[in-house]
Image (cartoon, rainbow, N blue to C red):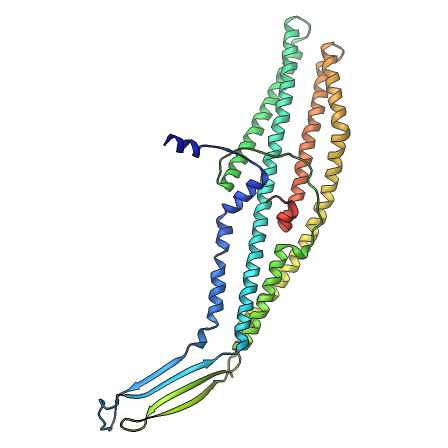
Amino acid sequence: MILILFLFSISFALDLKSTIRLTIENSPYIRGLSAERLAYEGKRLSYRSNLNPTMDIEAGNFGTSKESVSKAPIYKVSYSQPVPYPSLFNITKEIYRKQLESLSYRIESEKNKLAQDVYLLFFQALYLQKLLEVLEEEVKIQREIKDFVERSFKLGETTKLEFFRAQRELELLESEKTLTLARYKALLEELSAFTGKEINSLEGELSLPQWKDLNLEDVPLFVHYKASQESLSRLLKAEKILGRPTYSLSLTAEKVSDREYGFRVGVSVSLPIFYARQGEMLEIMSQRELLLAEESSQRLKAIAQLRSAKRHFLEVSRQVQRLEGELIPQAKSELELALKSYRLRTITLLDLSQVRKGYYDLLKRRLELLFQAHVEYAKGIFYGGSSWCGCY
């Protein structure tokens, strides 16, 4: 029992792929979408409902007949079989196939949407995790500065004002670290709810992803629209066939004497004079037009979003490269020099604080820009999914 409780209490450190995979597997909505296959199967079978045969049986003698019922109780038997249009079966198979194809791409599109949400949540949490590492380092440096100032104050080498300033800056940094830790834990709890696993940390590096060009014709969302339109076009053809005259063949056995029966063969035709499936056809045409309009709107939105995201992503990438290549190494050297200079009393605590703050602000700015890059990159996941990011 203790072992079972221990296993259930284990927390996990997950990477991006595992987080997205578990979220998709744990999503009731994604699992529930597959149930729509039953609706499509039911619609396909409904087209055969008008092919059921009919059978009439008449028995007994009535009126002035003096024949004995026991001689031949069955008076008439009639069997009628509707004759189907062969093309209807082929079209219903195509409709079903296109509906399943549309559903599969719709499920992929919904997975992409969920993956985008989890991707953003993951990198927001990873950003805070890396920010905590920077804050931890900054707190450590500031604590060393504060201890040095405190020793100098006790030896009478510095003022009480400098000691208070160093102590206050340390308290502010520790407060910022505490708030960041609370936000980080809240995001981990949110990810845990998505994945169904207790997550205590994340695995991964906050670095620049590689932007890719995307062909919208291969995007699951737009393939779903295309397959849906094709299935509606075939539905329209099926309704036109159902609107044609329907034929039935009949075979009748009817009593002609005491114990003799005669047989007849007949053909009946229903004439759709007043109603030939116009209502169903108008409904399908309306659905197809709405779907075309929705696809056009989504396509324009995708083009605008991806173009804007790429422009912002490239600018953020240039700034990150400049920070990593020039500004941060230079600021780090300045901090090392400032720490030595303060111990030698050639600069003031205020000068040291400004240099320290400048260096760690650059580190934080780098993390912010990297997170912004992933925010823009995530817009491509909504359309391209795994083929875009390779993250699930």
